[in-house]
Image 1 (tube, one colour):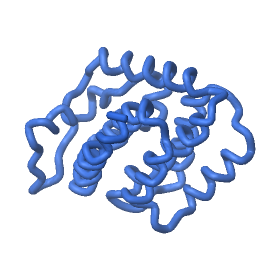
Image 2 (tube, one colour):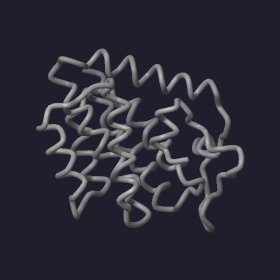
Image 3 (cartoon, helix red, strand yellow):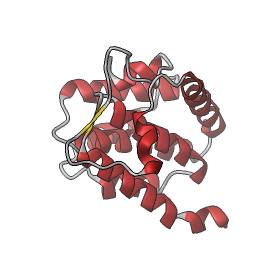
Length: 180
């Protein structure tokens, strides 16, 4: 089951037939062990409600477009960080955006999504430039999206863990924005 289909069905867990593994020579810090947690139904429901609340709150505001575009950029960057992203993953990411938006988007959104999808240098820094344009209240959705994407294939690659650690460091560096 793909990550985007799983989220669409409000499933944040790895299927029980698939055991999460960590790449060789990868050491998880104690604070990162939750990445291996499976079958957390409370997290499933929390994520579903978080996305719905956030999307409804931002809809018809100037924060909605950066939210949708930023989530897409982060999903693509995480999916791509451990290798080339395949066409099927791009389709699934669009399905995730459809789940988040729950409605048809204006053409300008799709133009931006296509531009991001075709970016040659879509990496952590590029994704954070999009996240930086998002309202701070949406960063929890980004955090869950990153975790969910990392767990999608049942393997936690070193590059994915590096992305996650950079994300947490980026969040810490942005603490002043939340204090204002």
